[in-house]
Image (cartoon, rainbow, N blue to C red; front, side, top):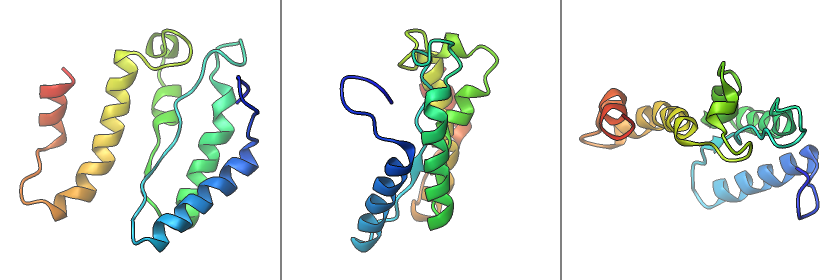
Length: 131
């Protein structure tokens, strides 16, 4: 997106992300991708649309590599009161971070659970940390 540094077009962003995934796989890692949150500061209409193409790129790369995806963008953009989740129009606030944490937990706990001897249930984590 436009800012103080040159913009990276979505197609180039997708190429860069695919290169990172390739390198991670070569090293034996199993990447888990996450979409960016919406931005309400650009365009000025507050729709969060500038980040949509980048979120689509992350989804496409995750799908093409059969990787797990944490769809932060969809979780936030679908909320009925989006401006309350991103109070400064750029950074998620506490309520936005709660939604993001739930997205991360719902994806990561099932992945990690078979490998861990004791992993708390998502509801326990949400009640204790995010309440």
